[in-house]
Image 1 (tube, rainbow, N blue to C red):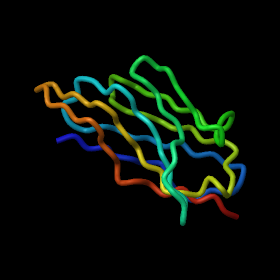
Image 2 (image 1 turned 90 degrees about the vertical axis):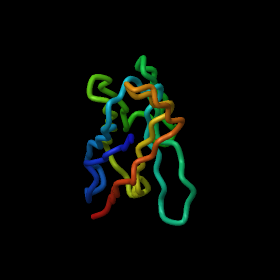
Image 3 (image 1 turned 135 degrees about the horizontal axis):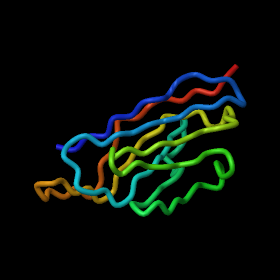
Length: 122
């Protein structure tokens, strides 16, 4: 059973920073792509950033220059460094893992975390 455990959400003022972490539990052999999505109140879930096992990263235009995704394959963990936060960044942030393979060769096409709330407000 593979689970994603997220941490780092909270309340910050505009211009502040947060660092989100998401660790995949279980005996992980590999994860192809890990990423972050977010869903603001009344809006659809949107892609924030993804990063491949080789470190190739893609960031949404709305966060380019402010957010940076990274990962530690040894820890099966993905991070999202968020700087210069804006009120419009307020959302529930979800961690995602694509194509997870465990050491006993179980394969999961997609795994989602339960989300962590980020609130940017004075």
